[in-house]
Picture 1: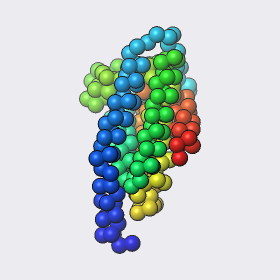
Picture 2: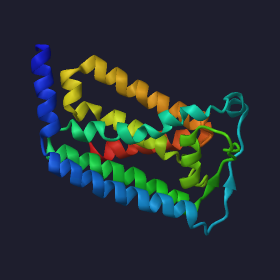
Picture 3: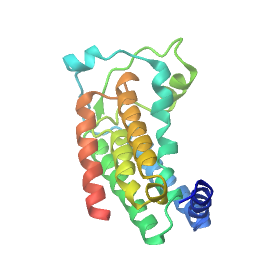
Length: 208
């Protein structure tokens, strides 16, 4: 397929059901963010302190990697906005809800905490992050869960058919950057990522 035709096909995919995509995105944002932030502030059950392993201690703190950490909000938009099928959009949304609500339920009944570095004199985006996100939603890591789930759903997107090698490589590398950034910003420990990845796989198997 010629490059010009590829661009036309991609633009067509972006335009497909665009109003529905915007609406479902806003609804999902509310349905995920409200319980997520609520559970980090409404602490009822005893907090479990997550102790770093020797491997966690070997990973340095790099506040600038918060850019990768926050980029998940862009990654989450890639599959739905390049899907052309409403049933696939609905399945994607259901998977996001499964991941988000399951994670929030676990966070509510089993709050976990990781120690954070002093944010004084750190990168401004890192200071912004720690000002709005409390360190009690650690296991499972929803950054790990959402990024892996998003990467798994790539095969339902127009991108994978138009740019098979490039899109797969870019999305999985992006996903890896997000996973690493959860550790280098000290938002998570390695042990937090494993349940998040498992949750993502389960959500994908249920929905697709």
